[in-house]
Image 1 (cartoon, one colour):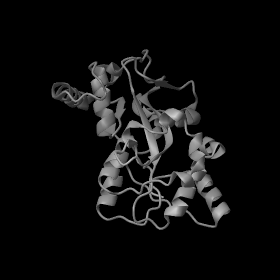
Image 2 (cartoon, one colour):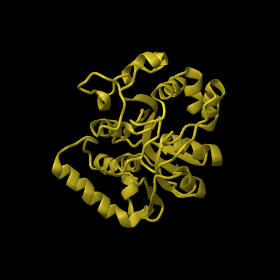
Image 3 (cartoon, helix red, strand yellow):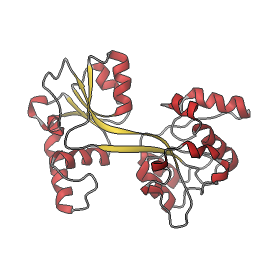
Image 4 (spheres, one colour):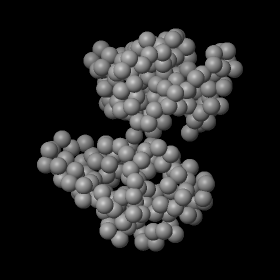
Length: 257
């Protein structure tokens, strides 16, 4: 397994099949692509983000899914069964949604006492050294685009250039850029953290819901989907499908969440 799945779920798979699960982690989607591009083989399943599914398919790194081996796919919300990033010309599915969520701002309420409702808080000089941003070129650029009032999906070069300039302007205010263990800076007291909703919830669980506020900025925000795919040259395409089938069981999906 390349990326992560809860150990308890892996244990359930082993109990049912007798097959042990070994997990390898990567920092981000680009690291996954680099690993496969460099000839990394032997991974039965991997967990890329939405846009990376298309990149991996077009790079020839994915097996088409045999949907008859994944009857639990019927449990996936109908609106997510054929997402835009997996509309391939050959008609095959190459991914199954694993988790979805949003990206916003975690606010440590005792550090930032003003009411945060906008991306502009991450550009406010009053918050210098109280800001941490994700180390993710799509999420950071997306935040800047929304801050400027543009679409997250713009292809207008002038708008992209303006967002780039806004990020450069913001840089002196930022204490760090990181997408690893993003709950940690919230827990340790960083005032404003660009964050995925699950990590914000994890921080709330550690320090209390009264000390952390998760804000989806009024200008708009990104929604993401992590997926499970089967890389080529794995050990067993059949058992990879059975692992995906397990993840689509309602009780197991709830455990993952």
